[in-house]
Length: 232
Image (cartoon, rainbow, N blue to C red; front, side, top):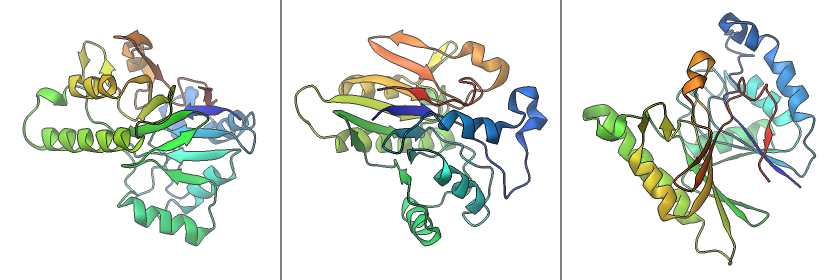
């Protein structure tokens, strides 16, 4: 069994927003995703780091989620900034059950355990919101609470438990960083953080590598050629 990660599928089977309008990098991207997931086996797990579909409601997203469900492996999803279909995790789970979608789980205020690793995470928020006031600061603080709830859900675990974090927004980007997010990752001894959100030219400002002992990886679909990246 192996663990993979990818982000930003941006599906639009039911919402009529094809991604090829953003350039040749996105041409035929649904088929490329299907081809990329073909490397996974039925017992493999892939964490999808947000922005799954452009749909505005669960009903509009049904075909997109059927596509995700049909991809190889088990999928663990988290919310991105364009997941407008999202209302609550419980409503999404009830929808998946009603639609017979059996390979999708939700990472939200919880964690999953996989092969000696705790899979934690949250959407996050804008990289410079730590110093912001007003609406952005409220969202940022709420995301900090959700991230810590997920990290706490891992428990102490056995000796050698690895803590891996998956987010939509990057904790570190260009010349700014979400200091409170990074501090939480240190507090709970996270060793790897995967994130998405960044597309096109701004990917040049993405941070990939080790920073203060934690490894960061951009896994946005167009950055990884629509192929899930093997983590374990």
